[in-house]
Length: 283
Ligand SMILES: *[C@@H]1O[C@H](CO)[C@@H](O)[C@H](O)[C@H]1NC(C)=O
Ligand SMILES: *[C@@H]1O[C@H](CO)[C@@H](O)[C@H](O)[C@H]1NC(C)=O
Ligand SMILES: *[C@@H]1O[C@H](CO)[C@@H](O)[C@H](O)[C@H]1NC(C)=O
Image (cartoon, rainbow, N blue to C red; front, side, top):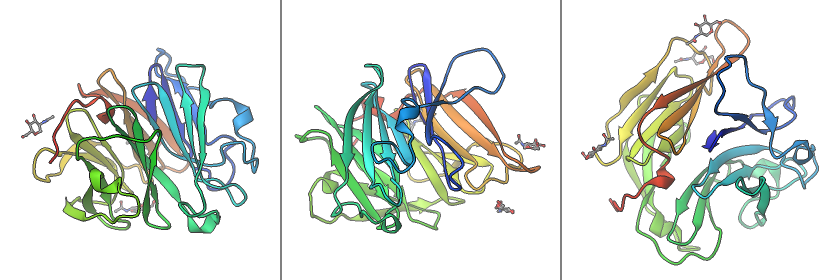
């Protein structure tokens, strides 16, 4: 999930190939409580199955403060993995299509699983960190050649575990080098979605749990309940995104009682996306 301006973007899981578009959007405003219609992004022409000029399987998505939408595309059996960048301020124009070389992300569909993305705003540009859950690599992509930036931390978790880790971003920029992974602490469940706001609060959503938690990363690791509802019975119960007006947007997938219902919630947390952060903390 990602938000920019008046639009909220979602990538949809297409496990059984029944969803015609894996990247969609809906308006953030409007007073109607009727279920909103999802619009394909940019339009239907970008959602042709097994056409490698189309998005095959959008997974991680993120918006930056300059109005770009970054989309990780895990591809298909016939199409390789890609990173798409769109300019939302220029009629959603496609700004970049980066096809990962085979040496970075396997062309063989069974040997890759591109999933999450976070962005790092450097003085002149952006870097993207993308997880490949199959090869267990973090792919670093720089939009231009970067110059320099403060040492910062990238937060990640271990697969199939509640453990939270971090790595120093400055170490990741050394192509071909290795990085030290630091253990931070243990959550009460397995997180799959994490997000940091401009006040350095990390939010986490957990597999199979109907609550979300938070941790102030300026302090020693300590899990606090952020939001909790009754039973949801969903494997991926929630996701969230921050806009630039101090709102946290959150979805709930409710599978209890058969079928599946999605709810969209909004909370004024008074902080923005981590990309708006002015923090120079290098801890
Ligand atoms: C996990 O989810 C399954 C079904 O999705 C459910 O049967 C089970 O009770 C859940 N476990 C916990 C600990 O919530
Ligand atoms: C996070 O912790 C720092 C250090 O204790 C504190 O100054 C800051 O106010 C906290 N932030 C939030 C949002 O609670
Ligand atoms: C989930 O859906 C069930 C069945 O429709 C409903 O009874 C329950 O209240 C819902 N849970 C939440 C947390 O909204």
